[in-house]
Length: 332
Image (cartoon, rainbow, N blue to C red):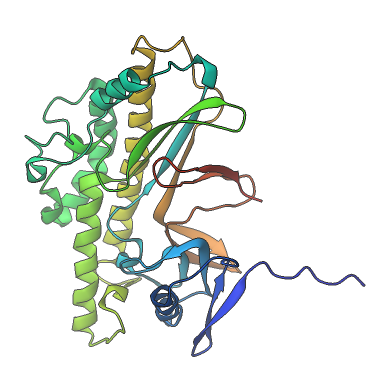
């Protein structure tokens, strides 16, 4: 009889019969990240265990790099406020030798095509990181498809209407969001970008995190961390949160698709590159999201915080920070 294949993960004992599967061998894990993982794993509605990836680090609400399966409840702060944050990457027909010696003009063309950053305290009429009432036709058409869902959510929760919506669709944002021109191991040129659901997703996340905290106070539930506040299935706000998160994740995927189209158009129109096209499948994936999935005999809610799904055949992107290596992966 052959010996069983040894596990590739370590087990962190969280106490109270709870544990974490940690794919972190050879990777330092901060003490606070370890304690944060344990606090999540001990919640009574965790299904089986919490999983954690090699890029684990402390986050707000939940540890970045974690996968949290829950039965009958969702923790809004676990996924946070950048709902649907993720990556899109597209391989072009160009190779490295076809790029000009200076990429300055290409960069300027991309920057002109995709609003980025944040000015004027985010005022959508003045903010250079938004369209400021001049969104292109493809953005307006995409918003027409998204708007009915948004209007349904806002009808029940009017506070979510305050701030930018269509003004942020097809825009990059700030923080660690980026656009890159990069090369693969065969010197093929790729375009890659990192962004999420912008202002609308931030409002949805912030709003329902507060609703969950109010629910904990209402039911006198004391938690070791306020950001573990949760909404239970059947409660007043649970289904509204699920609908709003789903919409925000659609916004995020559409946002990335629109930006990639703008980047390709800008590069083609820059006059500095040979004619090219996108070659093969475009990878567009969330790494900050909530999904309903079947695991270990049960339909559960899975919150991924800085992690991608890797079912057999799934394409995903594991990003570095801007200028560092990123990886295109396929689930096994």
